[in-house]
Image 1 (spheres, rainbow, N blue to C red):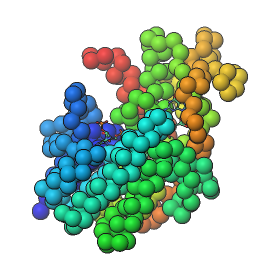
Image 2: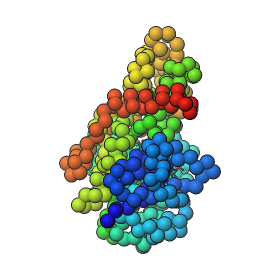
Image 3: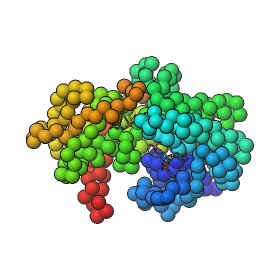
Image 4: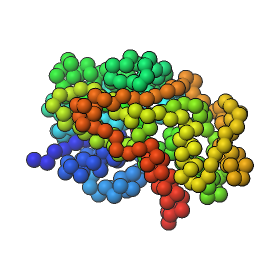
Length: 342
Ligand code: NAP
Ligand code: GDD
């Protein structure tokens, strides 16, 4: 019989790639999205899957909404990708972030426990939980030290998932995913913001790209590879928690250098901290500047993951290199900016 899955938070970057992957595996895919005034499911359109998924309205703040839907559709698998996922905003909206990213997870687990006990559950946990890292690289056994209201809320989501697995024998997994990007990344995250900015500058449509901390280091992979790992977790023999990461880390500055190279210009760096600027080597013009408004009250300086367990137990490995990821993002952005809908 055809398998079925509900993706909660399906309208986001990972949701779209996961929906596409599950459709390729011949699943019936329910895409849980919020009702908004401007329902523009551009990511489904981009992947050409808008007619193949069944949209269902789902608001994680609304307990009875979650319970009714989970009870009605009786799916084999639920992937919870919904979150207030922007770390910066979590400092301004800490309570809302906890409501969705922490308590929201418990609402889903309760609905499964009460109305759909056979359903397997995936929780989108995050490397942000390692925060002020206690060891390098970070693995499933590294102690957590979150540095943002987002990280703290996600830590609750992580532990409540594990708790329901142990207490009620539920098939509930937590994927501790390191940063993963794509042409479908939200424009406020640093990789996509950098690519939009540098491509616009290259096309003469923008003068300067303003960013925050250029020294932060992240383990950046391709989102399309990571959704495969989510599915492998729910289709393993036993429920468990896994890190998904590339094992390589790069600074924001290094990401900018790589993106600039793809756009045929070379950045030169001058100064430090708030006075640092990146200039175009050919013209000498400043194209990147630091704006302290983008600094965070507490920062995560270095993330680099060890995905050995996922490799050994699930056979998962990232397929896309850092350079391939950057050039894929740059190419897509240039096409967007110069295409018929620009
Ligand atoms: P994203 O693009 O921001 O997508 C998040 C989705 O959650 C959006 O579709 C959003 O809906 C939905 N959502 C937010 N609040 C909701 C609510 N109250 N009720 C229902 N849906 C809600 O994030 P992503 O990059 O795809 O990440 C997917 C998940 O993985 C998130 O939980 C994120 O925290 C986690 N994660 C991401 C990364 C990464 O590097 N991408 C790494 C580790 C963990 P709208 O479209 O209506 O806003
Ligand atoms: N967004 C943003 N904008 N970040 C900037 C900027 C800027 O202008 N300038 C510097 N940065 C730095 C941030 O301070 C951070 O250290 C780093 O770039 C990455 O920022 P984001 O791209 O916003 O990602 P994140 O690492 O904070 O969070 C992402 O990854 C987590 C996994 O580690 C999100 O996808 C989270 O949802 C996810 O859990």
